[in-house]
Amino acid sequence: DLMLETTLLKAWCQRHPLMIQADLNTDQLMELMEKIQPFGIHLQGGEEEKTGFKSFEELDEVFERL
Image (cartoon, rainbow, N blue to C red):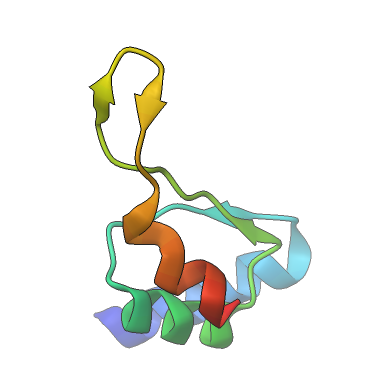
């Protein structure tokens, strides 16, 4: 049950400085962050296009909304 999981995550976040990482779109991530209020989030860019070169364009919307 998603509601139970969200409630449990929120309780944990209130007691401990938890960081979350989830494969969600920006809207889903913002909604989850608002509901559970984690200490932080872990974001990861896409695959390396070549050695030492990685694009973070897919994270731009998350950064703008934060």
